[in-house]
Image (cartoon, rainbow, N blue to C red; front, top):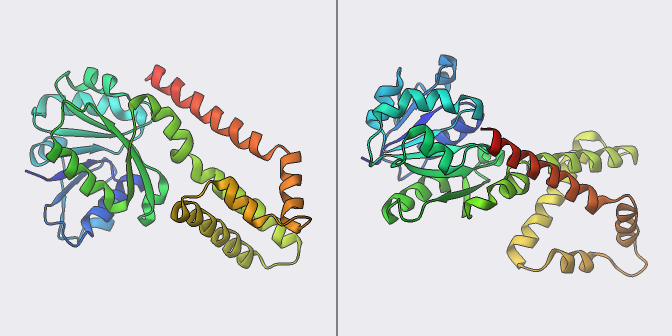
Length: 269
């Protein structure tokens, strides 16, 4: 049994379901359950997706069970599914607030857990998903199958669990930082006379290209920055103004606030 089941098919859960279902080599069915029945509408005619009307049936069908629900609902849902779980099944969490230890308290100490933190670009197949697990508990085949499924909507990166709060700040929340930067760049461009739609397209495309440069060249971001900043030129004037306004420090402070909030959520869950 390699079937994957999703409890919760909102924006993130729905995006993951859609990406996995559209894999050309994906033959195993996907089971889905959501208390919001309207969420099923977008999946009614997909041949690989089975809609389940109750949690018990989803658990019985699924080897991998993704809890793609909001953190505040984890305790309730875990209480509902705990008695149906079998030792060979794998629970995949999508929560910044639930450690593996917490999940074992909710579901039983022998439960197999993979903890993940995806981000919203998964909606377009460009997500980054950090994951962690207890190495001695899951088999190599189970991890490989998980990676096969989650690579459907982007890149997966293994991290030690102690770094998950840092992941939330670095990839989980960072799309919001990028959107603010794009919006600010566009606002400036509009003030120079550029049409709004063009300003958004050019700003976003420029950032996308810069990101690809970092990933493809493997060069230090500082080295790539230096290549753009000619002596006495326009770019160095912009960099100096950004530094004078505390650009780097603002980013670091924002990420630090996110990191500390993620740690706080872990303690409160």
